[in-house]
Image (cartoon, rainbow, N blue to C red; front, side):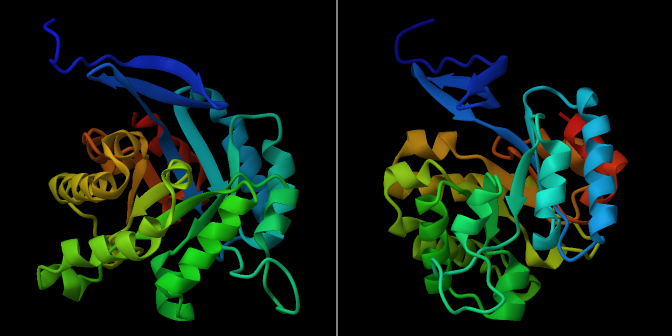
Amino acid sequence: MKVGQVRLRRFANTVANGYFCSVIKFNNSPIMRKKIVAGNWKMNTTVPEGKELAEAIVAKLSTVPSDVQLIIAPPFTHLCCAGKAIKGTSIALSAQNCADQPKGAFTGEVSAAMLKSIDCTYVILGHSERRQYYGETSATLVAKIGLALENGLKPIYCIGEKLEEREAGHHFDVVKAQIEEVLYTLTPEQMSQIVVAYEPVWAIGTGKTATSEQAQEIHAFVRKTIAAKFGQQIADDCSILYGGSCKPSNAKELFAQKDIDGGLIGGASLKADDFVAIAQSY
């Protein structure tokens, strides 16, 4: 192969920083991009039900490809017992949110430090439901991401457009603004710790799903927007997940796209069989 040509090689079962990933090479620069399937349980299940669900996922873990990182994100009340259920496995624990303050008189809030103390690895931030129902702004999310990173948590930062924005042809502008207003405040080192989840708001819980072509188009745009600020290597290494009615029947087609590195799963993550089947789509 001639010098300067793109060289592509995939290695399965490669461990990087304790997680499995695929290694891709472009012009001799390694791309360490994790395949991730994360389950966002939202405000569902009681504590006993959540414990049972976590245990059911663990029981099926041997059927999941070893280069796919499974993550579960139970409600705050479930984190400790779910964490015990997955302890000693490759499944990672995530919270669904964290406070924008480090500590203090903020009744009802849960800090990033608290989450880290119970062995959370990830935290979901910027989900459209938080933006819509709780008024979270870009400034709020800058604060939350900063605190998450300071406490050793890896943010799963959610972006995505509403139906009217998609129909008006503004989806690229919306997504670009959500990236620039929040992620552009980070250093390259901080950005390397971020997982991005693209969730078209019009597809969350509606049964509608972006076509694989639509999803790939905007995932590629997200990667390009990240590269414009942080360089191509960091953009190439960033895992970008698809969310929005991803299920066993469509996961394989979505995950086959070049710039889709997994899924942030909602409803389908509440059934162990469906959640594991999505991971098996790889």
